[in-house]
Image 1 (spheres, one colour):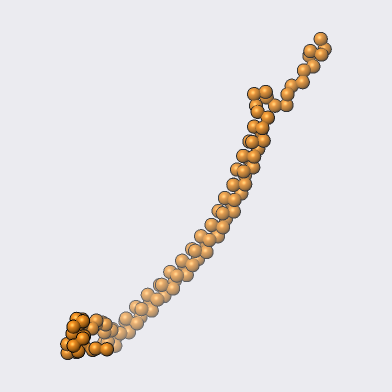
Image 2: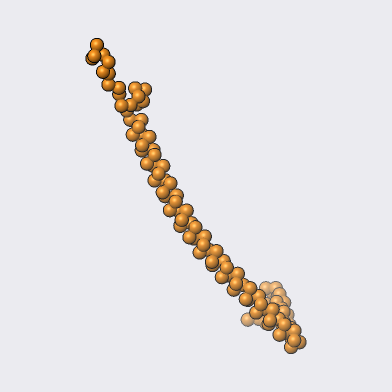
Amino acid sequence: MDSELQYEWPTRPLHERPDARSDLQRQLEEARATIAQLKVACRSAGTRIDELETAHEACQARLTAQRRRLLVLERQLEGAGAWPVAEQAPPKASWLDRLLGGPAGVPTA
């Protein structure tokens, strides 16, 4: 009767496959590796975002300075009574006009 009472229970449930635990362990390790890679990528992305924000601020400061400089130059022109001359496009000549010497006032090169 003593031999019947001393039954050794298996270390894993009978319905569980022997390789199921190792498969789950492998999946867990893969998930942890993926999480570690994502954390590294997140840190590097954060660093790059900070660099881009700093560059953006520098560009905005430069743009503001250039706008102020342009405003000062425009006011100096107003004070001097001089206005910048708008660049005029040369009159268009047809290919026949250019071949025959062009109309008066149109340079032929």
